[in-house]
Image (cartoon, rainbow, N blue to C red; front, side):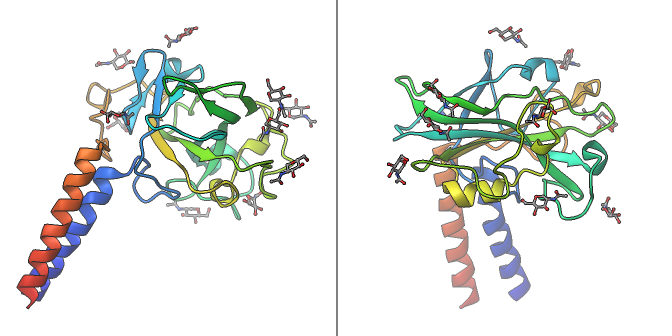
Length: 241
Ligand SMILES: *[C@@H]1O[C@H](CO)[C@@H](O)[C@H](O)[C@H]1NC(C)=O
Ligand SMILES: *[C@@H]1O[C@H](CO)[C@@H](O)[C@H](O)[C@H]1NC(C)=O
Ligand SMILES: *[C@@H]1O[C@H](CO)[C@@H](O)[C@H](O)[C@H]1NC(C)=O
Ligand SMILES: *[C@@H]1O[C@H](CO)[C@@H](O)[C@H](O)[C@H]1NC(C)=O
Ligand SMILES: *[C@@H]1O[C@H](CO)[C@@H](O)[C@H](O)[C@H]1NC(C)=O
Ligand SMILES: *[C@@H]1O[C@H](CO)[C@@H](O)[C@H](O)[C@H]1NC(C)=O
Ligand SMILES: *[C@@H]1O[C@H](CO)[C@@H](O)[C@H](O)[C@H]1NC(C)=O
Ligand SMILES: *[C@@H]1O[C@H](CO)[C@@H](O)[C@H](O)[C@H]1NC(C)=O
Ligand SMILES: *[C@@H]1O[C@H](CO)[C@@H](O)[C@H](O)[C@H]1NC(C)=O
Ligand SMILES: *[C@@H]1O[C@H](CO)[C@@H](O)[C@H](O)[C@H]1NC(C)=O
């Protein structure tokens, strides 16, 4: 009986985490607010798989809720392998998988919200958008886009400051997202997708590829999973008594 209750609770507590996060499972910082990201006419569904040609130019980023600016848009590759980095393999900022680190693809600062919720304004591309091009020998890479608040007179945290952030610079590797979040504040919203330079398998096109299923992330699913957890926990407690 104890085992069954424990099992029930484990399942109940694990489910909503998969349903609501708009960031990859087990990756921090995390948020349950979805950032709307559109590459031309394609609106990104979390964990969607792309070919590099479709994501070559910076996307349009928008957010549903009214914001007090300014904000920062930051995009990272979370799947840089040691072979991709070709640098030291110790003391690296962790990426999403074992033995991976990060690469800063885009850092747009001084972003303000314009009517219609598109995040733009006279922003500064502190790090210009670099087109994702994962090596053809790599499994699909995961990319994350965050919307961070930008504190008054914001400057990059010490570990990331003073780096040459030109497009071809090695300094974009091993970029600390956590340090950025510590300096700016927790992310307001996020979204993520994958990209591959491998020929796409018929079964891996779109959002139905192996691995993590796309999150639906809507307020409704968030509420229903909270409801489910509450009921399941209550049942567990009643059964335990
Ligand atoms: C924006 O809000 C609408 C209405 O609440 C919702 O249906 C839609 O999914 C939201 N879009 C995003 C990207 O969160
Ligand atoms: C997206 O639109 C831009 C122009 O706005 C165009 O240059 C580019 O080729 C388009 N990309 C794709 C993948 O259609
Ligand atoms: C990676 O970045 C961290 C700071 O975020 C730094 O402590 C570490 O030394 C860097 N590693 C390398 C190999 O440069
Ligand atoms: C990670 O890298 C270490 C050191 O290079 C290596 O010993 C280990 O086998 C690697 N782990 C995986 C899962 O590749
Ligand atoms: C924001 O814009 C102001 C005015 O142009 C500039 O002084 C400041 O450095 C910018 N901040 C960032 C983080 O880009
Ligand atoms: C940020 O953009 C504004 C408006 O385009 C410009 O006046 C300013 O010089 C830029 N600041 C930096 C630090 O690039
Ligand atoms: C921001 O910088 C300006 C100009 O250097 C300064 O006057 C102001 O006090 C600073 N604001 C904060 C909150 O540090
Ligand atoms: C920054 O990096 C780019 C690309 O590697 C390089 O061309 C440029 O000279 C570097 N700038 C400085 C100031 O080191
Ligand atoms: C295509 O299928 C092969 C074999 O199952 C797999 O190794 C590869 O990762 C898949 N490609 C993508 C882009 O998922
Ligand atoms: C998979 O997607 C790619 C790029 O969007 C496309 O060229 C290819 O035809 C698709 N393959 C299948 C089997 O749908």
